[in-house]
Image 1: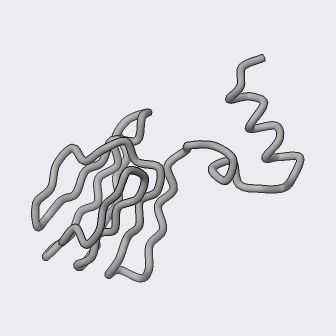
Image 2: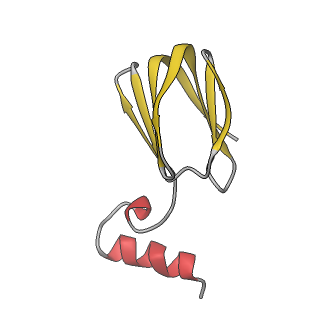
Length: 89
């Protein structure tokens, strides 16, 4: 049994979301004006219309207008602006 399977089983047993016990990416939207991406693996690209981050299993892209990277550390990034879509690759 792989560790990833064990973590998934533990999360299910404790009735927790899987990302609470793993490094799975979590995206939290606060309306259409703010997105928080947790457990990212680095910034791939950035422009006023798109912010793209590596998730370790692909990429996540936040699309919109007037996007700004407000904060970024090793695990979390915060994007503000007018968010129109979130895409996964």
